Amino acid sequence: MSRFPAVAGRAPRRQEEGERSRDLQEERPSAVSIADRGAVRGTLRKPVGVMAWGFSGLKVCLWLVEKSREEAAAFSWPCKPSANFASNEHFGLEGGGPRPKFVMSATMELAKLSAFFGNCPIFDIPGRLYPVREKFCNLIGPRDRENTAYIQAIVKVTMDIHLNEMAGDILVFLTDQQRRIFLPPPPGIRKCVISTNISATSLTIDGIRYVVDGGFVKQLNHNPRLGLDILEVVPISKSEALQRSGRAGRTSSGKCFRIYSKDFWNQCMPDHVIPEIKRTSLTSVVLTLKCLAIHDVIRFPYLDPPNERLILEALKQLYQCDAIDRSGHVTRLGLSMVEFPLPPHLTCAVIKAASLDCEDLLLPIAAMLSVENVFIRPVDPEYQKEAEQRHRELAAKAGGFNDFATLAVIFEQCKSSGAPASWCQKHWIHWRCLFSAFRVEAQLRELIRKLKQQSDFPRETFEGPKHEVLRRCLCAGYFKNVARRSVGRTFCTMDGRGSPVHIHPSSALHEQETKLEWIIFHEVLVTTKVYARIVCPIRYEWVRDLLPKLHEFNAHDLSSVARREVREDARRRWTNKENVKQLKDGISKEVLKKMQRRNDDKSISDARARFLERKQQRTQDHSDTLKETG
Image 1: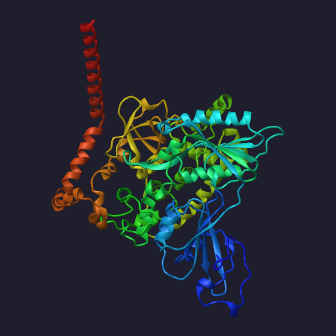
Image 2: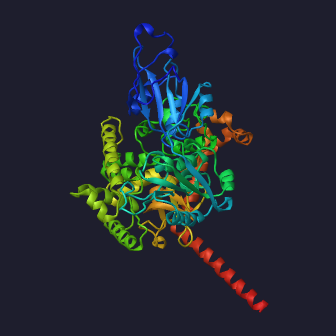
Image 3: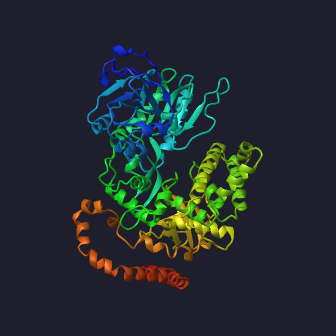
C-alpha cells in the first residue's frame, strides 16, 4: 500500500521533485474526489490495481488517474463494477497508457476482476463495523422459493423483535419500500423501516440495531419464453445478505435475523449478484458498440460475457426498430437513437412523434416511463380507497382508456400546478419521481431540438385527432409488445411465441378486456400470472405492416461473426441460404396474407364460433357420461 497512499479524497503530502522516482509505480500522487462520470470515461486507461473497500455495503468504483508527472487525481463514480452495462462496456474498451486506477467495491468478484486486468494486485481494507450477531430463523426453505411465504415470516420475526428485544429501531428488507424513513420516532416508540436494497447500499439510517432479512429482491430478468425483460421476485445473493446484516452494526452492536434456513442459503442463494448484462436485454449495449464501429459484438471482451442468445436477440430487435440494416450496420435512425438515454423501442416512438412535429405528446410519457412507479398505493384500507379514487380521477381525465395518456396527464397537471409537491400529496403521487421526470423531459426535449435541426431529419404529416396520433407513434416503437385478445380476458402476444398475458389490475383498462381486440403494453410483470402493465388499445391496421418484421428473417444473418459462433444445427440452416433468399419476397407476401386472413373480423368471429362449438360439445359429452354412469 505504500506505493499508492492516496485513497478516497485524502491528499497526502507530495514528495519533493528530487525524491520522486521515475518509476510510475513509486510515485505518490495527490488525490481529489469528484463526481464526474464524463471525466472518468474520458481519462481512464490501463489499470494496475484493485482494492476491496470495506464500506460495509456502500458500492463505490474509484479510479486513480495520473494527470501529470507532478499530480494525479482520484475520480469517484458510484457503480456496480461487475453488475452493470456501463462497466462491462467501459472495461472492454480500456486501452493502453500507464495510468494507475483503483476499482473499489464491497461486493464485486475480486478474483474475476483481477484476472480480467492481467492478475493485478488485490488489497483488502477492512471497514469500521460494530459486532453483529446473525441468526437463521428457519421459517422458509428451498421449497418456498417460488411463493410468498416469506412475507408472513417477516411479519412474525419483526413482531418477535419488537416484543422481546431491547431498544433500537428495526430495518426490514422487502421488495418494496416505505417512505419517510429518516424521520425520528416519538419518544418511547420503536421505528420499523420497510426498505428495498437501497438501504443496504446507498443509505445509512441512524438508530438501526436490528435487521430482518427477507431473502428476496425484485430483479429485472430477460424471459426467453416471452422475449421480454420482466420484473421478478428472486432470492438475493450471499454478498447482498452480508451487506444487509452489516446495516445492524453501523452505529452500535446489533442483530440480523435471517428468516430463511441454512439450506436456503446454500441451495437458493448465489455467491454474487448475477450481472445485469447476463440477464437483461442488450439492445442499448449492442447499438452503442456498433455506433463505435465495433461490429464483432459477440467476441467483444466484456468483463462478464453475456449469453450469445441475448446478443442475437438484441440484434434482432435493433433490426426490427430499423436501427441496423440486414448486414448489421447502423442506419441513420440508429445513429440518432444512440443519443437517447431510453430503450430503443421508446426512442423509436419519440423520434416518430418528432417527425410528425408532435413530440410534446410523447416526451412527458417517455420521461414518466424512465423513472420509478409514480403511483402511491398505501397498505391501510382507508387510505387505499382514497388513493385508488384519486388515481381513477386522473385516468378519467386522460379518457379512461389509455395508461400512457394517464402518465401524460399526471405530468402536465403536476407541472402546471402552483405547488407541485402538494398536488402530488393530494393525488397520491410520488413527488420525487415526478421531479426526476421533469428533469428527464427537459433533457429529452433538448436532444429532440438538436435532432430536428439536422437537414436530413425526416418530416411527416398526419391529419387526425391527438389521441390517435399518440397511439400510432407508440405503435411505431412498441409493435413488438402487441397482443390480441384470444378467449375471455386473456391476450396473446404477436411476436411468434403467442404467450398469454393479462392486463394488470392497476391499469385503467382492467375489467374492460371484453371491449378490446388489440393492445400494446410497456412491460410485463410476473406474479401468479403474466401481467401487461401500462396498456392502451390500438387498431390492427396500425401495426399490420409492422408485424411481419417480427418473423421474416433469421437473427444470425445480422452478424457475420454470429455465423461462425453458432451451433452445428444452425450451420445446417445456412446451407440453403441462397434458395431462401430467392424465395424471400414470395414468403414475405405469403406471411402477410396469412396474417391478414387470420386477423380480419370474419376470421376472429369464425374462430370464436369454433371454440364455443367445441366447448358446448365437451359439455354435452360430459353430461352424457354422467347420465350413463348414473
